[in-house]
Image (cartoon, rainbow, N blue to C red; front, side):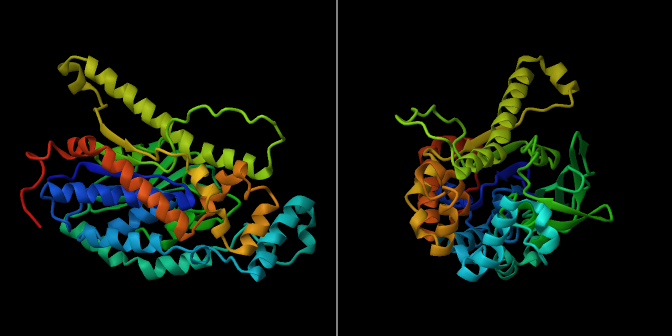
Length: 399
């Protein structure tokens, strides 16, 4: 392990919102470089990702021996993103999958017996599988683990088969799988199937079968039933953790509109998505903060006896409402997608939260990356304090 092997990175879920994470990481890389940190050196030996954050996490892990290169590749992918890179967005796909799925849902699944090969989700994400196979070199993951640039990678999913929350981790260290209430871990070789499963937003993308203890379990988005998003990094040995969210951690109360109308399907779905992707992280951070405060109040001798240990954290999350940003970019989606989403109210301002998870378009992702960069730069002092004071713990080597 490297001298900084106890630093962890947690990248959360949120579909297209995950572009924000890349902007934050670019700002952090720039700040560290100003302090003499070599651009190739990985500042996060423990990397954990969920949902779309799992894709970013794995992209970084596959370039652990050259962090700067891996970050540039992710920037290039997100900055040129188009919806058809992630899911089929042509008219034929909407008829064969999206429209048929919505029809079956509205008429009831009892008609399924008369439909051959009914679609399993709203969208066909085979393009994402193709993109990941081209973009990721898993031999780089193995090389990073062997060289010590990477200590561990963890990807989370949720099993529809058993209802358990599953964490798949890859490391060369002697770390036993952990078992907690509704949470299990398994050492594995991470591949594209793990990423597709972790990023399979319920109803939106199809579930993926994964091997768990010799049996196949169909898995979906890792943000579902994720009671403790921070725990994988802690189990893997992290003593300080950077957490990059995909939505505002503390929402200010909105002023009710003058005219109250019944919520659209998209508005309800967006609310549900926020519960899946944002709420559990906020609760876990609050829990960790309470534990840290309690430990700090204990005498040192009692702290040394406890199995708990203080964890230093830094949280960076969007300073603006991502759904409001999305409302400005909905028109950039392909026409067939806009027509279908318009039918459930997702193209309206009040339904833009749902659209934000599907807005894999460069106009939206670039604005999110710019926001992430700006937010992290505003936290320059906190970032440098997290990695050290800018002098003693940061390497003196210049690049």
